[in-house]
Length: 168
Ligand SMILES: Cc1cc2nc3c(=O)[nH]c(=O)nc-3n(C[C@H](O)[C@H](O)[C@H](O)COP(=O)(O)O)c2cc1C
Image: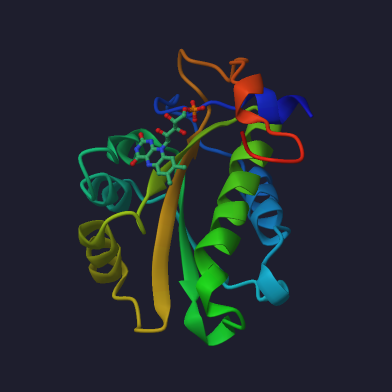
């Protein structure tokens, strides 16, 4: 699938909105992801408000792309839906990757911004949205029409990382 190989993190966007239909396609792609015991732990906040985007961009030193995005999706997990508690981050990762691949397919640019990777970022998102205790922040995905950098092929295949039958 060419989108897997072309996808890159796109951090600069045109000042142009993303169509509602495309945002819905991104969310449909996210919710189509596999999850442990089909627990589908995800919840999403779709943010297009410029003031909120500017505020969210201050989450970490690495979350500046949010400010210029047309839309940023906040990926959250709802602990009420957990059946296999230990796998929620893997489930959410699959949903995040689906968004990135669908964005590439739709001619959009996107970047995954880690939240669950740092306690300070988790607290920032909890406070920003006044989240209840059962809702765990996972990541942001910022999206827009790409400026300059496009999704381009980068070959990362490394035969040395593949082991057959045993590890050596
Ligand atoms: C868990 C995770 C957290 C990430 N956090 C950030 C981030 O905070 N800021 C950012 O600009 N990119 C972030 N990225 C994107 C990576 O930097 C990027 O995927 C990596 O450099 C490879 O580049 P590519 O996506 O263009 O292939 C994150 C990616 C993952 C999977």
